Image (cartoon, rainbow, N blue to C red; front, side, top):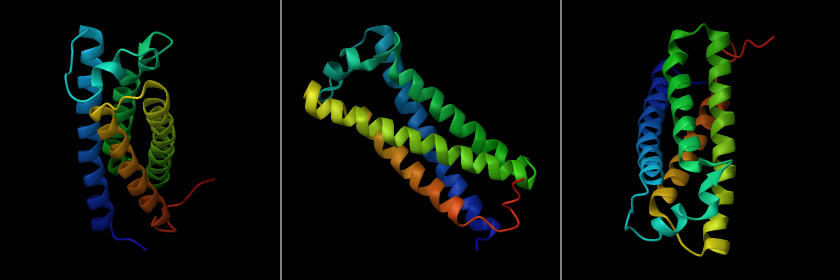
Length: 150
């Protein structure tokens, strides 16, 4: 069982992490659209590779939108009734799980195919990993009366 204070603390940490991820992904998106150089590690090599886009859209933009979705759900959660708050909590868990899996794939691509590491991509991957772990903790510690799914 968890208290509201513990839930709020985890949510607060997650809000901070999602803001960090949004700043990171926004910077990478700006680099891509501005055709700017980063100059840190293998950032430019990774960001100019064909793997940096999906259907012509920068991967970093998808990342920024992912962090915005996480922020929105976390912000809305205390403003929702118990059932919808539970749905929001599970949605954050699902989004972060997908993000971690996709980040793992992209990290593999960096290491095995591109043979360069973008430090900003690593920050995003680690941020998503922490968000996923905290989302899992929040789902597992949910009060039974909060889990009011039909």
